Length: 302
Image 1: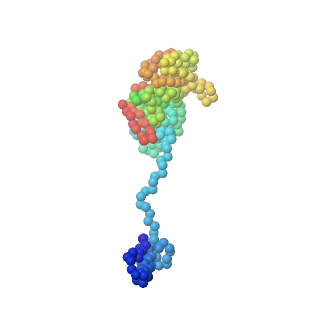
Image 2: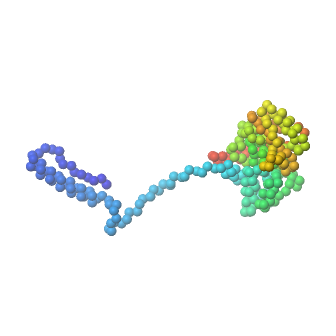
């Protein structure tokens, strides 16, 4: 509360009356000041004053800045969404790679909780076989289940037509066999895997080749894509030795300076080379792509 002060009148008067008026004004001012002070709330403790409870703001505190999601966080978000496609009684193709591993883990957890039942998995690699087995997922092969209800896997690149590059994890042959045998193929990626054209990331597009005369096929593959500035390299393992697939083959990785102009034609050309087992172009196979990004999870389908 503001203090009220009465100011002396500015009108003129005689000295004696001025002195008397001034005295009277000062007395009135003093009384008003005392009165105002008495009305002013005191913040000092008093035995006769009940403590005043502080008033707290009712508005919510400002949220702390959101923690940026890692690439693994995004992969897990997409993987969990992909498992929504799974229902009890399905025969499933289980993919290979870091994203597919999240899918297999989620399926294992749902089986353990009883939310999914009667699932049979067909793994696309020895790594996935071991992971699924450790989670108690019943497993089989294409020999016993030649037709699958659904396959879920990751991808290394996804173009606007939902064509893929796969196989940087080294399992492209088994992945393509299992996923081609599935009624529906759902792909799980984070937004960094989206490209305008296959080969556009500048990373490896793998080709699985037999060990016999692999250099011969390495040279032929590089010549096949010389217009795209392709460089063909034999994939090596951590010890610097040739990487050997689950099928005892080698992998020649193709690195493109510009995207592949005609992916279907390229796939056919690669497949005509003797000694080539399979390539990492997965064309016209995808039913839906689940994409996790900074703005959430989205789904693209044909």
